[in-house]
Amino acid sequence: MKISVLPIGEIEENVLKTLQDRLIKVFSGSTCKILPNLAVPRESYNIVRRQYNSTLILHKILRFADSFGTFRSREYRALGVADVDLYAEGLNFVFGEAQCPGKAAVISLYRLRPEFYGAPKDEGLFLERAVKEAVHELGHTLGLRHCTNPLCVMHFSLHIGMTDRKQAEFCSSCKMNVRN
Ligand SMILES: [Zn+2]
Ligand SMILES: [Zn+2]
Image (cartoon, rainbow, N blue to C red; front, side, top):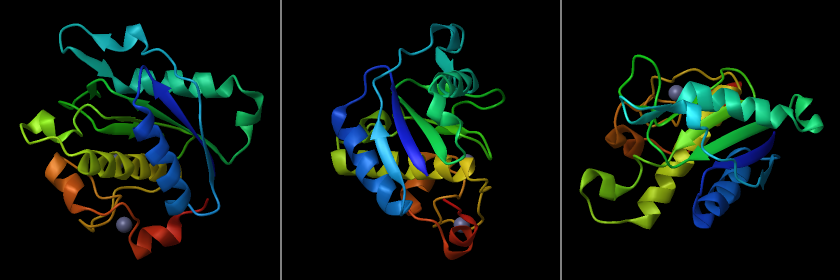
């Protein structure tokens, strides 16, 4: 895969660098670059919910990525990283969303900081959660569905405890289905 990390709004450098370092390890043989940031699409904000529609952002990412000619090649992926609270129709919130399979994915950092849950700041834990969500959504772009193994990165996280429980890696069965 040729992964492009696309910051949506202002995103901490440390998060972007960590994602870059870790993604090329999990998806061996892949490359990962960080693109200049894209403004948070104003039309994705839902004034009643005070949250941002992840599906609209996903489409924006895809359109933006498609504007680069080279992006048409099969192996390209764009991973949007936002720091606003995301929702999808029918769900209270989402940690991320992706095309399955497809080329675009988005994750939100908003609910990944321990402080969000009233816990003390823990940069290591925060970054680990971001890596897990990024690997999970990129896994979807490769066509992987949710996995029943609670330790597998493709297991669905209903809440942050489930994200913390799983690893940042694919289980052996998901690994077999990953084609970079
Ligand atoms: Zn998922
Ligand atoms: Zn699995």
